[in-house]
Image (cartoon, rainbow, N blue to C red; front, side):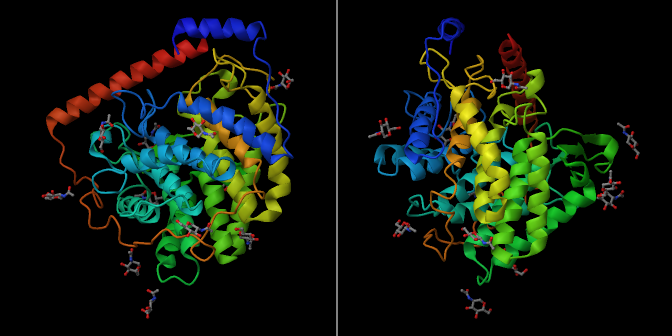
Length: 456
Ligand SMILES: *[C@@H]1O[C@H](CO)[C@@H](O)[C@H](O)[C@H]1NC(C)=O
Ligand SMILES: *[C@@H]1O[C@H](CO)[C@@H](O)[C@H](O)[C@H]1NC(C)=O
Ligand SMILES: *[C@@H]1O[C@H](CO)[C@@H](O)[C@H](O)[C@H]1NC(C)=O
Ligand SMILES: *[C@@H]1O[C@H](CO)[C@@H](O)[C@H](O)[C@H]1NC(C)=O
Ligand SMILES: *[C@@H]1O[C@H](CO)[C@@H](O)[C@H](O)[C@H]1NC(C)=O
Ligand SMILES: *[C@@H]1O[C@H](CO)[C@@H](O)[C@H](O)[C@H]1NC(C)=O
Ligand SMILES: *[C@@H]1O[C@H](CO)[C@@H](O)[C@H](O)[C@H]1NC(C)=O
Ligand SMILES: *[C@@H]1O[C@H](CO)[C@@H](O)[C@H](O)[C@H]1NC(C)=O
Ligand SMILES: *[C@@H]1O[C@H](CO)[C@@H](O)[C@H](O)[C@H]1NC(C)=O
Ligand SMILES: *[C@@H]1O[C@H](CO)[C@@H](O)[C@H](O)[C@H]1NC(C)=O
Ligand SMILES: *[C@@H]1O[C@H](CO)[C@@H](O)[C@H](O)[C@H]1NC(C)=O
């Protein structure tokens, strides 16, 4: 949106020209109508259907955000609009087109920005496609590509510092290569848990995934990023001093809680092991306590109250909401804790969606009762997914191979590709390095500019 349009929108909103939306959480039609409006706003950012645009990309947003968008859109399609072949084709094309040369979601032209968490987010989206029986590509099933993501990420597990874990970045020339973070290992954990549950307890390969999940969990405890007795999952730490506490970034993000909480719920659902039940509950309680505002409405508490959430952070509630949906379905006795929070937040989110020139743009503060002037892909993603989470229990549960899922398993997918074990192995040329530094600087300047502008 241009500044002029924003001003016009702001005036319209002050004058109350756009009526506030509301939903009846007991009615699937009402929820789906709201979801329909919100997802149509999400497509406004899509460049894949524009002249000169790239299929699968969203205007001005990082590549991982596109991946995250499609997960919510797959759910929207499945729950609310499954007869719409135009919508199905748009989603299918977007996800498939970005798979990269080796079908492992590492397209070479994203290597300047792609970290382990970015690849992992696409892996999470692939598992959404698998569990929702979204039409598979004939040559590469969604599951096989999720397995390629899992295998390439697993190959980068790095015991040389901090006792293990994944580095934030994949490529040594990207800034953040010297940092280990909870979300990168959390994506590996979540994707592994979901593949394991999908294959089921009798598959010969299930243990390959659950062993990795055990390893990730143990490492998160050992390195101190899990401090669940203080309700905390910290962001990460620099490797220089072995991820010691004095190098730790003490910030909490809702999507990190989401991937671990839901991953533990998948593992409990697979194994019936009480340990996973109580781990999932511990994170649930921690997250419900922290990610809410004074009205009990969902909030990205680390940045939102002071208004410094960037584009990425403004989308985190999308995955947190989807994870809550999964958790209450996989561990039904958690529903009583989760549902009131989801319903309150969904109604708040919908009431924020009366902004912009179109009168249906969503905002970021869900307690305000109307649009707060903030807009972006993250606002649409988060509002869409919290609304869809209301439908938990009324829409099909995530499928497994034993309950009608048809995505083909290829356990060694990605293992033979060149990008598997690439810790330090990918050649870095001086020219690329300079280029990467420049792009990082440029992106930072743009982000700073954008957030300063958001604050106005
Ligand atoms: C199907 O989805 C497309 C793309 O989102 C949309 O333009 C169209 O209006 C939808 N069709 C119906 C019948 O809802
Ligand atoms: C990146 O590569 C894909 C093919 O993997 C291509 O379609 C796309 O146009 C390229 N450029 C961008 C900006 O994504
Ligand atoms: C699982 O492993 C056993 C023993 O190695 C083998 O006999 C069986 O065929 C395998 N099953 C599948 C589905 O691969
Ligand atoms: C590095 O940290 C890991 C995890 O906390 C620990 O297991 C290991 O002993 C530490 N190594 C050194 C040399 O401090
Ligand atoms: C929390 O648990 C960690 C070990 O995981 C321990 O070192 C720390 O002292 C505990 N903190 C509190 C407040 O109990
Ligand atoms: C953290 O502790 C290590 C020693 O364990 C020390 O070398 C390092 O300088 C400390 N870092 C900071 C930021 O204080
Ligand atoms: C709680 O909701 C009311 C009514 O929507 C609003 O005026 C108030 O600012 C909210 N409080 C917080 C802490 O968000
Ligand atoms: C596992 O998940 C299913 C939903 O797919 C649910 O019906 C079932 O109760 C769950 N099992 C356990 C042990 O919680
Ligand atoms: C999944 O999709 C396939 C067709 O692609 C279909 O045969 C199968 O019945 C579907 N499963 C469920 C549970 O809907
Ligand atoms: C699965 O685990 C077994 C036993 O550790 C190992 O031999 C095999 O290579 C693994 N397979 C894959 C596809 O990771
Ligand atoms: C893998 O690497 C080899 C040698 O470095 C190269 O010839 C080949 O084209 C690469 N394959 C892919 C799929 O990138």
